[in-house]
Image 1 (spheres, helix red, strand yellow):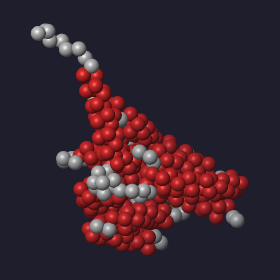
Image 2 (image 1 turned 60 degrees about the vertical axis):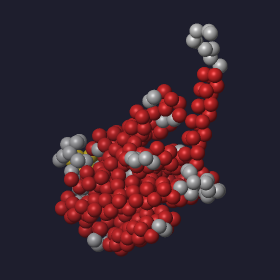
Image 3 (image 1 turned 180 degrees about the vertical axis):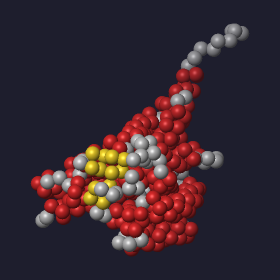
Length: 375
């Protein structure tokens, strides 16, 4: 097997890792977006449903981000060095957002609520969940924008550290990433609410999925228009070699919208995941063979053949362990093992904790001596 083919395989593995992180981890970020926007009389139930859905799997989904970073710096160190140097501002802010999001989700608990600080942790969780995919999207837009040059393994740019990722195209890509995460989360949450026999919540999240889907389509169209002017190489690829995938993403998006309108929520869940994968695959094919437009290609950035072979073998061996483990994790926590009557499991658990706490308070007050004057 040639070095160029091995390098292409490693690049494809990175692309598959990005797709997996978007389809799974993106829904976690989208949950934070809807946590921020929850309103109305069922706002608390929406937040409880989001916490219940994210809780068992959100940390496991981050394994795909770690995998992407590890394979990138091992097989394409020039790309890793250039991105982490020229785009260190959004990279650093995104990492801070990931850390704050995880910490806030862990600290936001019944104890924090009793201490009166759960609102602050909730704001940090939802804010970090919104800003992080936005920053990741701006990084992708900057990489494809053609303003980041790499000469002699060093990143050079005519733009500053701030303007490189704040072009109209990059900012639109960031907004599109947030909207796509919101669509994924709303669709998944609608299915989970339906499984939990909570039609009110299912209807709310179905409406959110339809609304965010329309917004995502509009932002995607704007990003495509901007790509025509600010990233011509990407645009030519999208309407050229990646055209079947580009059209496929549009068709699958229409299927998702129809499934949501007709109430076929499980079909919508499958199609929105497929749509996300198709969008990212179209981007990757359109950009091929570039890893950073316009200077860095897969072949020029690859490490020696021996390292590529080792990474390919290690990835294959690791997936034999990782994929069954993740499947079992989702099977245990996301499998339909029974439908609670009329309320989500999260809501029932929350009510149980509140009732137990109220009983303890009442018991403590009953045991206090009366302070009034004796008759």
